[in-house]
Image (tube, rainbow over all chains, first blue to last red; front, side, top):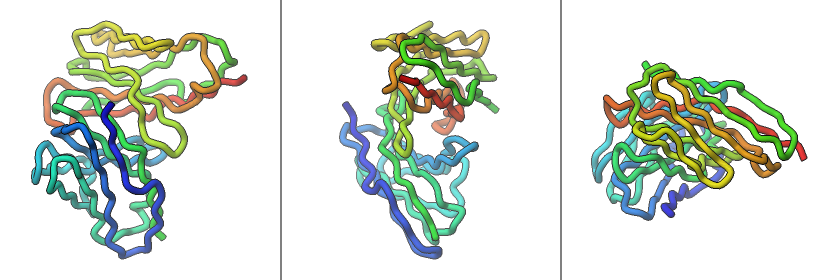
Length: 112
Length: 114
């Protein structure tokens, strides 16, 4: 089975800090995604990548950036963390664009 | 814009009962539909993926059906167990459009009472 690993389960950061969330998948998937999940709002797509060094904005990219230097790793960067970025962050991957998703275990980020 | 609705938002059943979870979508031009479970504070675990050409998929006690014409999918859980307690989400991928065209439902929170 494909494994998608998010490096941190819980993070607490201060307002204004630069935050890196890491995601690694081990099955050579082309596509990787970052979502945030908030109560009542469901999952919202932040950024996705369909190839190394390629990235596309999702529905809510403001305040975020991403990096994909290697196929297996997709990083989400909060340039200057704010309290409204407190959320559950979920990374996912898929082999091809139309395949189902495999998700990581999530990172619960709290910005204080 | 695709809208995905899951009703009810929460469901509580006694152990052993068979149950059905619903997922409705407004745009029937879908590529596939995926069911997930999510335990509190954790990521999503894929349960079943149904392609648009399929009517149903089965895995153990789980059976998912798809009716594109009516914009509905159901997840049937047979002989429910306390370990089935979780939130169940469906995700619908549109046939047209780019990678971002996956819409998730908010989920149904299931509690199975021993």
